[in-house]
Length: 107
Image 1: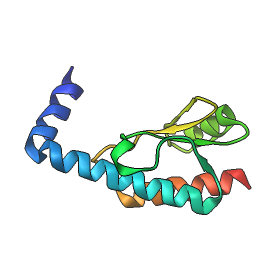
Image 2 (image 1 turned 90 degrees about the horizontal axis):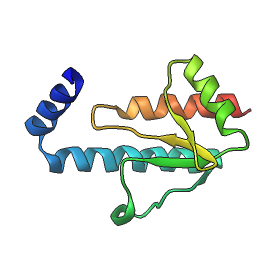
Image 3 (image 1 turned 135 degrees about the vertical axis):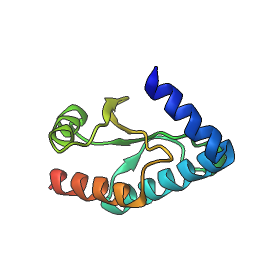
Image 4 (image 1 turned 90 degrees about the vertical axis):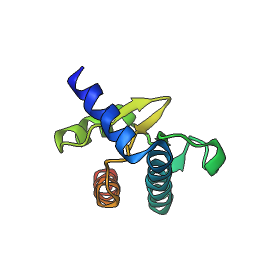
């Protein structure tokens, strides 16, 4: 409950347009980086079809999720891939760190 209240206060403070725009920028950056690594994006890539979720395909989603978790990165295995849900409070550095870790673990 406390977390929900704090989250709602932040959304009200920054405004829905800012939150939505920020999430779309973060997911766009995430998808670009994942494509650069050579991974298949399973979620829609067009701005008008996107949400705050990116799912990408790997051979062993659960294994990658477990390895990422050991490094403090929380994602989930869903739909035959890895589901990432950045929010407006994440940074572009977070996206870069995540992608670098994925690249390292998939070698």
